[in-house]
Length: 477
Image (cartoon, rainbow, N blue to C red):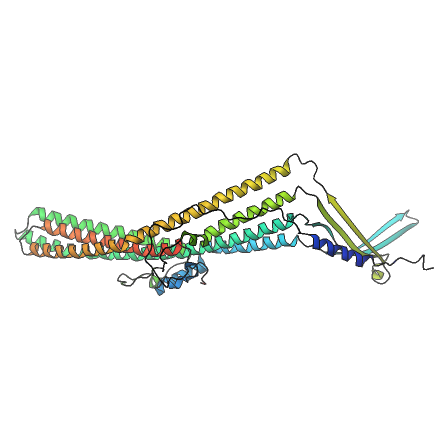
């Protein structure tokens, strides 16, 4: 066989590889997505209720939750919730799902290379004389790899990346809300335990008063009206004990529901806790509303907005031609055993171009949908900022007057205690009727219950301030 008739073995595979590399270099050179410009914040620059100045105030987003939740029992309950809460578990799984979706979208930027080995056998002819032909082939290559010349695939990749980031911020927001809800429910359990204890103490005191009144009534020193009034007061106290005991059980159920696991009695707040279980997060003076832009829910809304911008880029790129490549390298032989030894080499390189001509307005409609979705995302982002500002402003307004309210309530409890002590002494010495003593006792009891409620409001406000300014959402469990 002469050289001219010999099988041609030109360096086409090398040229083919070079062509593929050049095409890959051209891919993604253009982006049709509009430039992202953050919308103006639709809220005042400063809060009207300025918090007390704190020179050493740390950035709330960097404040570890252990610096705010001080009680060791509360910390253990929070850790239990971080391990057991189902909503948080779903949020973490959603992050993994979004991360996988991003990897899938990123893979479209590179060709998918597949290898195929096949063997065929065919029989032809009559029963008397038939022949069996065999062939084997092995190929490696890729098909329909789109060159991203106009950034469609890259825009979809950006959209998947922004969606992943939005999902991650949603998880941070869920985690932060969980911390705050656990702390609030734990504090509520403590408050109801104090209410039950106070109601029980009041009931025991009134029962002793009832015993004295029954004795005086038997001696003719107390009227039937006094006896009936004391009996009514005792039954009212019994009703309070039952009511607050029921509320305590409901509060504990709510705590265990949000924790996602049973909470042992040893982890509940003590009745006589004197120290605050929650510290007041340090807030700098002249607090700017710009700090709200770092809240996880606001950041999530912004990432959704960026994803919508990327969708516009993909919709715009769909108007332009789509170029795809299909290429294979392989060998063929009549026998599988000789495939790689004496097989015939083959290659193919098939570029294709698709130009949209008539889509009945579908492309324009897709672009309109993407642009309207971006407008919706802008409105949702602005709404998230307004909601964050409203929550923070309300919490600051409550904080500004809580100390004054607590001082006034403590003074009221002290005055009521003195009034009840004097009225009870006058009744026991026969100076006044039981009516004055009962009235003074009810006033004292009511003032004590109101103080418990106000203390709970003050502690809950500390939790709320920590939450609304986005503090500590990244801290480890």
